[in-house]
Length: 243
Image (tube, one colour):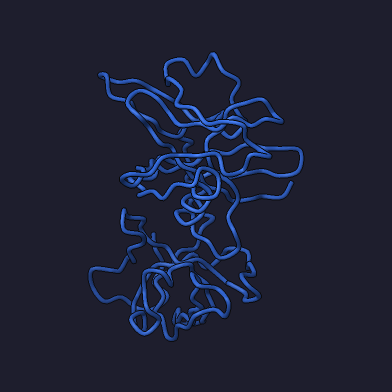
């Protein structure tokens, strides 16, 4: 089964949550959908909300990740708590797919038919404060051992043609180098990255982004402003293994 990445937003109003009603499926679902080729999770979540409800939002924090399967695909869904920007109101922008949106009581969600992309999302009320979080699944030590994470020094950086959000990085790992594509162009200029030391996953299966092969993944922190790169707190050799 093909694996797909997706992202969505959770918007609260008091003790209620904003959901769309899917006409064909006759169920309620959170706004969200698949990544476009050059997107990071945060960008995908914002774009999907804009396309489905006409809203611009600020992402408050990442709630977690859930997964679910359809007949064709297995989805890994990243969920973000979002705040609507001042003065905006939701509207149905895809009437062929949705017939309405509603703020439904979190306590009474069980009375409604909900989509499969919400099936693993836990909703809790603690001390009269609404807490939403994705169901946590522990990774085993064996899962962690599969990842080869090394410190790499960025040697060159340039924008990927016809991709506003992608940068192509040449990264030195001491005994080898890799070409890595990362969706950070919105937050960093290529010239500001030269010489930076960052952690990279180097044993991921290569992927093609906008016709450019990526041979690993840059690790970074998600913030309210976007992306923050991670760096060692003292000088280390290129290729140093993260343990």
